[in-house]
Length: 571
Image (tube, rainbow, N blue to C red; front, side, top):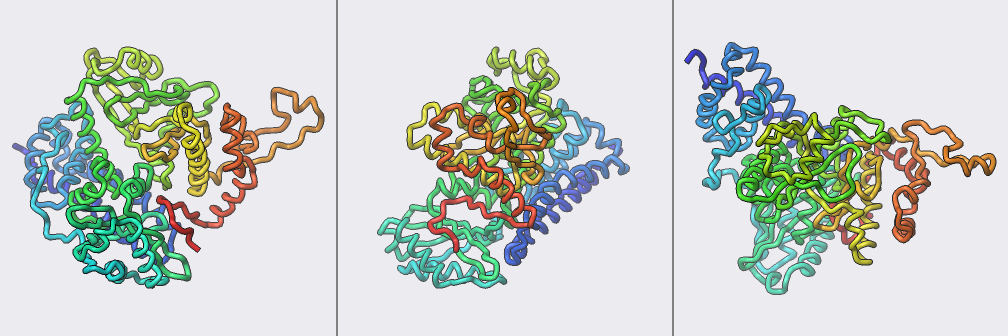
């Protein structure tokens, strides 16, 4: 052998350690950003952390090619040996599963996707399903000893910050009141009632979270304390959350990734999985910032589903898109989105712009109102797994992306996204109460996106989905833009009646001009929906509302958006 697999492996791991050091540094800075109320720095740090992965993969791959081992790493026949040496090298690491994904990223940056196999990279993980616990203490326990007040006080005094608490006694009493309301009497009286809290604080946007669980007599409940920093006043507890569905929303696929220190990522994910058993580990890895590991876990879940089921890809229910074609597996809670070769005439964009819009969403604060996506290249699926009508449509609308290779169908490029019920379809069978809630949340989602400097562009009902928790989420990104880039206008009065009767506008319209007073007719074919929505969110039809938000954003304000129901608004 004329090259050393061990030297190649060491070079790969040096690059991985550079990435991990950068990840840790950005994550560790979250505490100071929260304490110092540096809200505008938070989004920048989040974007830097996302970009760090691809930047370091690119750098490491280029260094390998330029090194004396360059010829060896470009020869795919050498990679089984490199893989075996790599397995030995990561055996004692606490982030070994992340290291496998890093290996995969380096391999795919150097080789074609049709060269992927379990011999050349880690299609399936070699990490053990269970392993002895590390010596890194993940959580700390607090015991009530019969006093809820003592329990709450212990926790708050343990988690102190350089910025003082605003009113520790008030927050202690609030936690007690929430525990009395949320726990059964027998649990409240249990002297052994324990709160197990992750020692690392979870930071995201303008909030910090103490995350753990309540344990009493073989029963458990989530325990999440959202903390706010009111500038000039101090840090306070905003509420206490013990409901699993509410905690699930905080860890939703529609949220930005948490900044939380996780020395042993698998142990952090295992703990969160106990709190949220309904969430797949792919979502939990993603939620704490390891989105590439989330992508690996998603892919493994997909191939496992295909191996153990016989359902076939079908076109996703809903109105066909003018830019994207969307298909799904009925038994797998995901949609697959591909870009059509030709767009509808009304869409004045190109393929490159669509790709950039979707990547923007990955980097931007999604405020719980935009679905996260994973971008994939060169998926290969058995032809027999496609419904014939689905395959026919995909081959017709996107022949450059969907390639018929006989027994195999190649998907050159796609995004995956959590499947939701399109809002227009949801409303068709919704009860009166469900309709009221969905319309209210639809307006709220638009407002929260705007608060995050996102204008959805195409706000039709079909471009929003309803999650299993009843939240309304935007998922069609080809027309999004920054809110501050939009020119909101009032339609000028017509100078004479003939102008109003004309089929063409009597006023000039620039590409970024938007007229909110046109929204009611544009968004709602159902007059009853239109009237209801106007009562709830009529301000969205007024250009001055949007201009006011623009001024706040341009002044550097970071507008509060809370990922949970609040018992009392903050003062």
